[in-house]
Length: 181
Ligand SMILES: [Zn+2]
Image 1 (cartoon, rainbow, N blue to C red):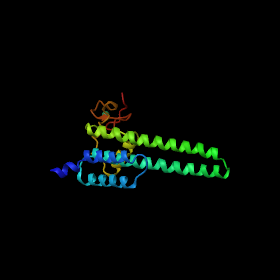
Image 2 (cartoon, rainbow, N blue to C red; image 1 turned 90 degrees about the vertical axis):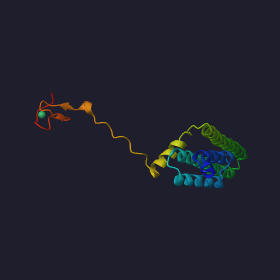
Image 3 (tube, rainbow, N blue to C red; image 1 turned 180 degrees about the vertical axis):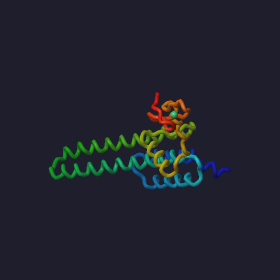
Image 4 (tube, helix red, strand yellow; image 1 turned 120 degrees about the vertical axis):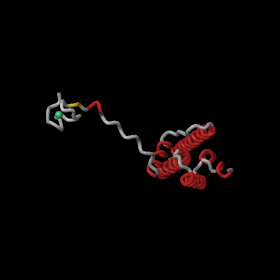
């Protein structure tokens, strides 16, 4: 079953994070779309949630990098215009440096998380990216709820047994009305 191997959650997860790694320097719509397709493939073929959370984490990592870049570009764009009106080219240069520096940090962060994820996947471990994996897991939880949790054990310690034999939780016996002793 070679086809099954290619489409396995692990291999799709690894390819997804490789795409995140090679596009870490700038947001890439194609990479995001390919990873989204991977997620859909798993959504229809895999029963477990781990593989889906992994691939969705890769997608969110790519999207988060793109979002941070987009927001920073907007904020810096406003400052650039202000400094241009003010004819302050020194300030523009400083902000250019800061912008480049933050862009570099975003690239390193995305690449680093992707590399750690790839290493973990190859080693058969779960992928854990701060915030991203939690967010992916909660998204999956909305789409496909987990198996129902075991019902909570009855709070036996809180109850008391009346002389008549009835077990009660209130201050008075529900059977004979005697107060709790
Ligand atoms: Zn009673």
